[in-house]
Image (cartoon, rainbow, N blue to C red):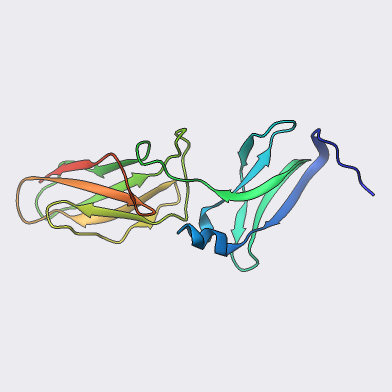
Length: 173
């Protein structure tokens, strides 16, 4: 029998944890399994802190992380905040017919970056175009667009998991 106290119990070496999750819980809120994050409860508090994970095993439905302490862990997800998330067009001035990249960086209400697993859409205001958006691996989502065959200014908007972001981006052609 191992008795676990409410204090943190450090290990002498790294220990790999494989924490199971239920993909249906992610689907119920419209997130992909890749949105999974791991949290640890700070000893003696009701505060949960995000833990760096090694991988998400979608075949076996587990989150894999390396830890050096025994504590309470849980799998969850971060919710994008519409006012803290950003969108930008790069470059924001492009010749007619040239390519540009529109990127979105999702953030929590505290400004912490959010990674993969969210549904992001980008819309060009002048024609309603909604190009394919991909996760870039650096915390951002991006879509490549071609500038229209006209001069002028366009406004780009985005949604994260169906919620419109507060900020927009502009590009001049």
